[in-house]
Amino acid sequence: MMSEGVPTRHQHAVLIVEDSDVNRESLGLLFQMEGHRVATAPSGLEALHLMHTLRFRPCVIVADIIMPKMDGLTMRAEQLKFPELASIPIIALTGHEGLRRHALDQGFAAALLKPCDFDELFALLERTCRETRPLGLAKHA
Image 1 (cartoon, rainbow, N blue to C red):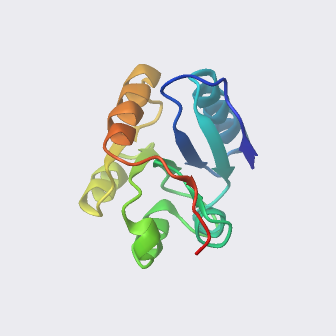
Image 2: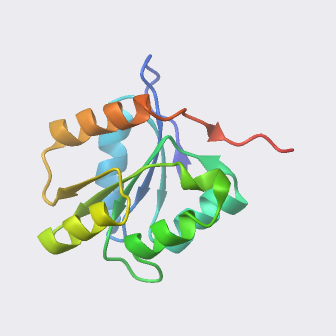
């Protein structure tokens, strides 16, 4: 699902991957209120489809780790198989300290424990997106 946020000079494309409808919609609304463009997916499988098949290119992915169909760690491993997707950073959100550390070991840009501090998440998103070229939709060759 794609929706437009309130335009601001710091608008970034963010992909939220979260199996909980309430958490996914809440995070999406918070990012939109901060002025970001938001796309959402309920699992890693749908997120990869959105990026690979539909060619959506976020500057950052914010993902849960434990999800049905495809978890966040598997999504990262699959993402790395596609050169055009491999450089998109992921910020993990998890309720488990062990999984938080494991995500960092697997190459996630950052990993926060749930419930997270939203000011910390927004600052992390800004820092991460500054280091990544926001792409939105990839151009067809």
